[in-house]
Image (cartoon, rainbow, N blue to C red; front, side, top):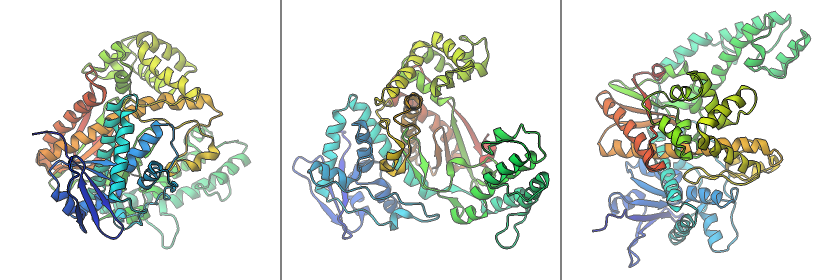
Length: 552
């Protein structure tokens, strides 16, 4: 009996019917037509890899019906990855567009990105693009398989497509589970920090008091939330500013500085996570920000609203586990330097990254006289392109000790400066040089951090891209492995939060030790699957807490 994973395709016809068929039956297979996509899932063998247009469009509907799948192939995400690899980023990536290209038909544009609506179950109600017939979906999938095989490293590209498709399953499940959030704790925090709210639309008491202190310091009414007003007020006092960023104003000798900094800090909380945010985004004890895998060029996740990846530590006090449950918060330790060791295959760097101790402490003994901070600055300077002042001296010391690691990012920077494409370890590809005026042509409105006329800026971008993007490759495998291990163990634990180096699992208290072990095992497995057998370790700092704020 073959142990090959069965594959089925699933497509909606636009008239409320779903069509499914196995892809590996040499006789052509049987077809199933139903009005309930969950019925098709139940009809297929356990462990089937489902080929469908978009996980975001299909899977929330299945989860709402109580149906979970183990594997999928997301046609539209795969198309985006393949187009980028082929140097065609910016072309429409929908299943309909892929089918049109395959048949030499006019290629329809992608629909505009939908803005998030707080508290909505978007995929159940959003207008969907024109349906792609089942036969067309099958043909597009076959073409994508062929194109994966034509890449420089087919096995890696297949792994990237499969792991990012798995990440969309994780994201949909996280969106459904939600991050536990105590609205009563949040409201108490806001009152503690900002004071009582005045009737109407006025700012809360503490902000109003600080605004009065700023105005008194300048001798006239100044609105501290308006940068132009503050800059003008300082100019009238004989102080020229380019911005009101904290680093620019905190050293100034002026009585307005202290209340202004305090106001800015609290105002950010008021506008980003205040009472309005709470009313919009937290319902039934859960925060659901709509996680989107691969939302940046490097593969890092984003959220479609809610600011979930920028939750201030003080606001994390509202993230509280359910009674009898715990939050397992795990941070990958020095992830990007360890990834650089793995992808560069620098023997000395891999040996250091495999030691059971702090990475920067180990590096500091290799040419930095035991100065951990200097070693950290040198490594991050290599990754992010700090090549002036002390950064240049530290980089030279790093290059002497780990020449292949530094050469790896130097080569990526040179390729970027010359306008060439660079790729992550698994094959995610950076965008081509693009003028800012063309930014609207890029998918989802993403704007690059460089222009074709700025070669050095592009070089800094590609230098970081190969490391940060390869770290994102590893994280995909981490999530897929963790999701699978939790399910196979029959745990009630749920993945509820992820950003590039941190994952949170919400679980019954008695499951917490097993979850900690599962996270560590998933990190090790992800390292082996992503980068092969290397000495590099991918350890985690984990905390089992009732409140997110207590994890750090």
